[in-house]
Image: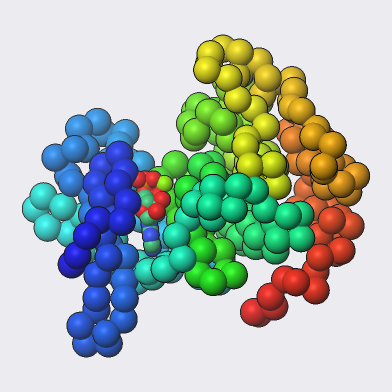
Length: 259
Ligand code: ADP
Ligand code: MG
């Protein structure tokens, strides 16, 4: 095992090598001593339970889970191209044409998760990794199986949906759609749509979906953003509608088909 490649609330992520196959892996090590609250144990069990079931080209593959007295080891596919976040920062912002294939892959991952009744609930560019042009979702720490309405405020404030910040009962699937809109905006603008040093003001902006529409954005992407960032979850765009939107079909030639 070598240097740490990421640090989380309960442990770190390392790069590793599976000696028999020489395959590179990522190992998320959770320190049991850092887990004091019973709800945190539940959170981790939930993450493992969810990850074990998932098989999708846009979702990081969990190979194995090992446990010692003090640690839990999640051995996963290693994604070598860094975070989408770094990719946006490096390029300042992405063109709509470059952003479209990444956005489509996020939607593919969300569609698959939702078909399994799973909501991610913490989608943001730090949890989206790149391997060449392929995007992979990681970090299911805050996701849940949404057989019922969810009402725990969670996730990262800038990516949180209105129903999350106002503490209403909400369905996880619609909050993932909202987060995909925030990510699309961040890709093509280079900054997030809802920002404020003051958390109360930030929440107000989110609740009213109050975001600026810079003049360089095309009419098509604005129409899509308006549908994704709709303040009422029930009026927010469905996955089926998103996939049929002209912004997606316009750039579909640049989307890699891997099914
Ligand atoms: P946290 O709960 O700390 O956010 P994550 O699972 O998001 O944990 O991992 C933290 C960081 O580690 C990620 O943002 C990413 O940079 C890196 N990372 C996580 N999983 C992998 C992986 N499979 N391959 C490469 N890097 C990873
Ligand atoms: Mg993370």
